[in-house]
Picture 1 (cartoon, protein in one colour):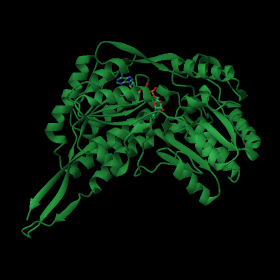
Picture 2 (cartoon, rainbow, N blue to C red; picture 1 turned 60 degrees about the horizontal axis):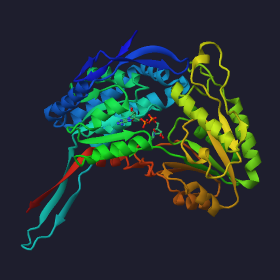
Picture 3 (cartoon, helix red, strand yellow; picture 1 turned 90 degrees about the horizontal axis):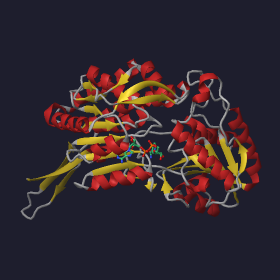
Picture 4 (cartoon, rainbow, N blue to C red; picture 1 turned 180 degrees about the horizontal axis):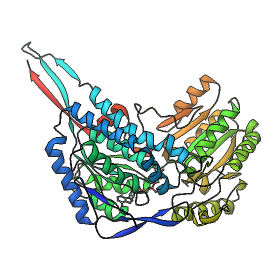
Length: 483
Ligand code: NAD
């Protein structure tokens, strides 16, 4: 059986200890991966440290940019391999990964190469008592060895979103993808070698968070940690980063609201909400699991979303007509189903779904759940307050703007929100009051990579994207020259 290996100092390394790679579509083991030992993690960090002090961090910026362009080209040249690997690992439809995950995986290297190339340094002239003055200017230096820890929902996209800017800024990285999705990160090692990225600049260690992730974040030679995952793990990462006073960037969980006003374009609101609830089987951190709909259009909206959910085609990720794949794993399926049960126990009206679909043939063994919609629960019920990360939402009716803003913000999370209205003044007024890192108006998941991305409240710390990424991945030094 194929073995997915760690990538350390430019070479694929097997630890001898294997774990299964499971296809969530069927539940079958399709490969095995090598679980990194503590020594592998130490070797990866040490390789990254050596590479930092070797050529990479000091390389002429244009040369580094050219290599990162080659990495992007390398992903595009092997587009179908990346597509197949990502869909096998996650069960997501090819049609989704073809348009989002893989192109963004490549774009993350091009965009951040351009960002660092075009970054300008600040300069300030200051007066001095003797009248000659002084010139202050800033220089950006790589921060060092960056630990990149990622989740399983958008493995290539979210990993490259960190690795792209980290490398562009001259850092070296040790990446630990989720133990559920190792394939594309490991494959990227081949692309790095082919593109001429020096050995040790990009390293990958595979395995469970509690062992391999923990060994990585507690290694004192790691200079900063960038993490995407749950808020619970984020607490641990922040704790580990505090030892040694290291910087960390945390992109965490959410319980995002979507607000639909009666003056919206109903068809657009339904189309956007269908995506924000069910895309990637609901496993999108920016997805909306809490919908608030103005009472006068509540019944119509619920009926139309129900029709949309029931029309979704669950099936083989390779089939271009498939809309929704399985959840990531059997464990996650159990978790989501426990929320489905809890909703009923707490008195929800199940508008549609709530169970396990009948899947034909081999797919019967996969991690499938039905797209699900509930109404009728109070705002303090479990499925309205806790992140589920499945293809489901609860819909609440509201009567006025002030009330819905209060309900939408009444959560410890603050990642994203969506507002549907054709009233321009209301759009600005409501969006400005959303306690979230991003608020979409009449859209969802539109992302310009130059803009700041991150969460408010317990959804994260820090912002990345465009020059905001440069703030995290570089250390600024001020140089003051007396003239
Ligand atoms: P998770 O926190 O369980 O795992 C994320 C990563 O952390 C994995 O690689 C895991 O192995 C590692 N990890 C776990 N315990 C660790 C430890 N003790 N030390 C070091 N590493 C450890 O999250 P997940 O289940 O993979 O992903 C789903 C979560 O991610 C959801 O909460 C979702 O909202 C969040 N997410 C957030 C964003 C964002 O941009 N804010 C994006 C995607 C996903």
